[in-house]
Every structure is written in structure tokens, then in C-alpha cells.
Length: 108
Image (tube, rainbow, N blue to C red; front, side, top):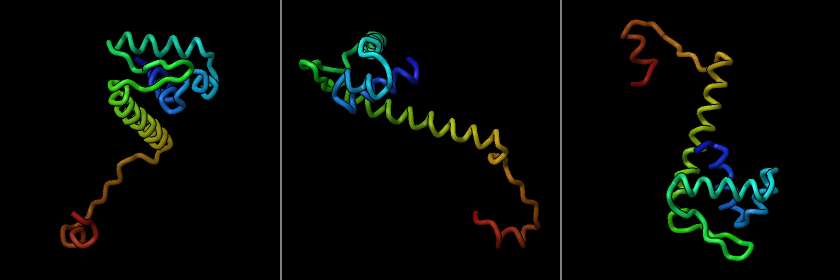
């Protein structure tokens, strides 16, 4: 399972359509369909109920959507933090002081 698979699933869930999700992602409809099918096979349950051209999340799909969204947010935050570290803004600041001064300046 890759982050791109999760992004694809979330786009389908948000749009309610594999075709619309494909347009949003700049991918072909068959590629999005294949990604969803592979994800379902890997997970061992159906994520979507297909109703004509529309799709609806299965009960398992609803639960998985919440976790997928949370995981992608964590990846986004991690990437942002890594950029800060690379730019030198994520370094730890060490302050050395006497306890009398430090107690008043730094909250515990």
C-alpha cells in the first residue's frame, strides 16, 4: 500500500465517482479502477459499492477512509517537518541559565 493508493481512494470517496477522481488526479479511469481493485485485494474487503457510474463507500470503506485521511495528514506533517529540519529551522535550541533566572523565564 502506497500513499498514492490512499490518495486515489480518498479522491474516489470525495467525488463519489471513479471518473471524476481520475480527472482530479490526472490519471486514466482504468488506472484508478485498477488501484482501487488492488487496494481492496490487499485489504481483503470491499471499499466501494458500485451503483452504475457512481460509487458509495461500504461500511468498511467509511472506517478505512477515516484512517487513510489521518495517515495522509501525518505524512504531510512529516514532510513539512523534514523540510524545516533540512532548512535548519527544526534544530533544538538549548538555553543554559541559572535555576533562579530560568525558573522565571521558562515555563515548566
